[in-house]
Amino acid sequence: MASFALYVRFTLRDGMGDAFDALVKETEAGIRAQEPGTLVYACQTVEGAPNERIFFEIYADRAAFEEHERQPHTLRFLSERTQYIEKTEVDFLKPYAGKYPREASK
Image (cartoon, rainbow, N blue to C red; front, side, top):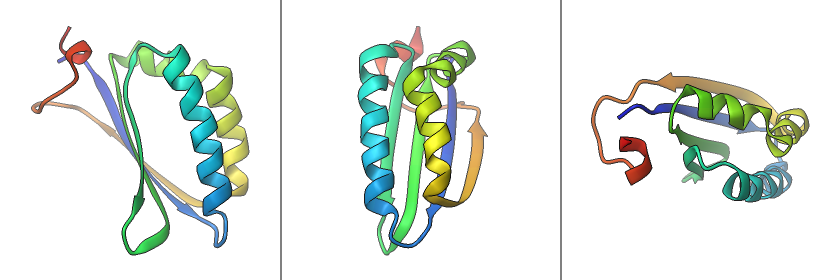
């Protein structure tokens, strides 16, 4: 289980959810097409908290995460997201148990 993971909580500015979600969907298309080392990139809304978004990301390893951060679609997301976000919280995770996609166990 040589993976690298993170949990991100975004608090959006009022009324920015649709625009932020559209940006995420554009970014996710690039991730699917160009990032084999990104094993999980899950984006969720939070029930009862319309301005909250949770991202759960698992990468094959730290190098895959760093490659993700260099991609044009990610760089665009990072620069454009600031107009929609009030607050960002990031936790870097150290997986120690669980069920992972097949690629993560290699």
